[in-house]
Image 1 (cartoon, rainbow, N blue to C red):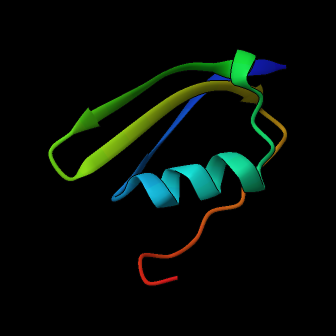
Image 2 (cartoon, helix red, strand yellow; image 1 turned 120 degrees about the horizontal axis):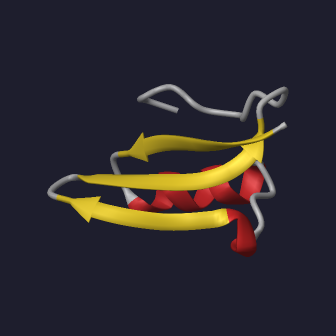
Amino acid sequence: MIVLKSDYFSSHERLTRFINENKIKREDILVITQAPSMYTIFFYGDDAVKEITHGLFS
């Protein structure tokens, strides 16, 4: 089932890495927001798939 997912990142480099490693398609990205020192992405994805993430210092 396709669901709305979200995640947040401390830099645009980490956000870009997340999108590329998880092969998130442009048409699946609903919005990317920027707040001071944080980026948040809202995207559509399969609820059975766990996205690749990295720790704070990776």
